[in-house]
Length: 508
Image (tube, rainbow, N blue to C red; front, side, top):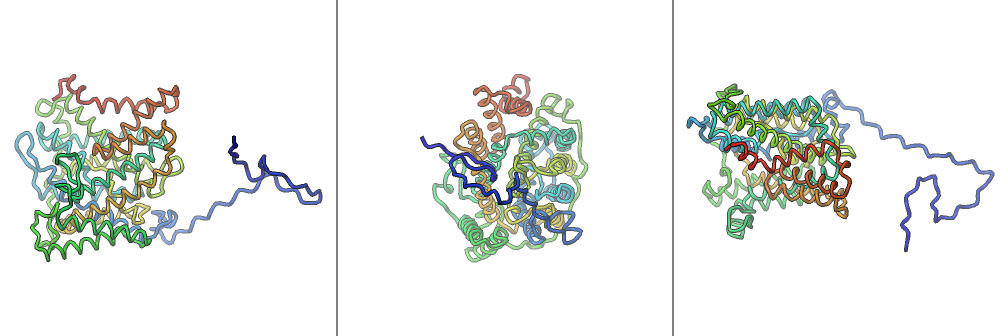
């Protein structure tokens, strides 16, 4: 049997090598070779560079500005979509004003994203979380008033802040094994790719099969063609190492959409969100009527959900806000090269604090809880590495307070192309996982696949954590995961068993 040689230090001879005869007159070699000097960190060019560490992180001002704009263009849809999600009636039959919801969505996104950039110094954008808005709209508001529902957002945000201040949230993130962190990045890549494909109409849901190519098993319509052209354009630009490939692709796709829509005279309903046409008036005055309309504890009373149901709702919101953001920060931070060899990010506590505060800020603004957006990866893919990019993204959201009609200019089909491209980039983390080790490969597989298959980041993280600890216990190494992983396992078991638990508690 051939023996595989092991690695030795440069000063030690290999067992299979013959040593040359020693020369007594030669100067003896030092016992150990001197360690190479670390590469000098480039000096900052100015105060802004020094504050954001732009040069130190290998970025440029152009990369940061371009990355910030790319992130905004990829997530501008939230200004249009969040008011639609929150358009339902509350327990009294009252609906929120659409213009006020638009203002609240842009305001909360601007404030939290700028804070993430200036304080957290990470290229992460924050806006109304679709999972949080969905829970509020579908499960909470039918049984509460809108101020009571926003009060629950404030409470869950403050609870997450307490977890950050106590250090528990960062310990949980750092306690997750490195292979699972890589799997989370891969899973988010698959998830955002599926989101992009579905939003663009390339992949269809709701037919005879769970997923299909187009609405009838084939692609149909000019908007899907625009999506395909945009994706291919970005891929070609990336292959040619063109700077700003994603932003150039989005801009080119938007121009193509304008031309095709005008020449083909397409009906507005042909497009997913709105037709790519210039708005009659790009300027609109913001309406801050929802700001501060919060009933903090009303949902816990007899005129709301009740104490038990409200507590279950807060638990659901905390889980959605906590682990969705945690996974996104791990995935985007790893893709940006901000994590060390153990997958830990410097200054993580600040980013986590702002993300948690986003829940309270969103509730106070009337936009529902804010969370880190996976679309932040589009800016990272275009070169963003610091908080300056987030500051740019937040600044554009602030402009949308006065120019909200402009948010509809980039068609959803074009913005979705960027998500597919970023998903392909995040798949590169698969090379760091030892797929031959089943104790690692199985939890990684479940994490990667369940995120897109369940349309839930939290479900993927939960399946990965539970399977990891159970497999370790089944192989006799139950101590190896550590106490935090076992605590997380218990929490996620409750998460998966929430329906029977609510039934047992009499919660409907």
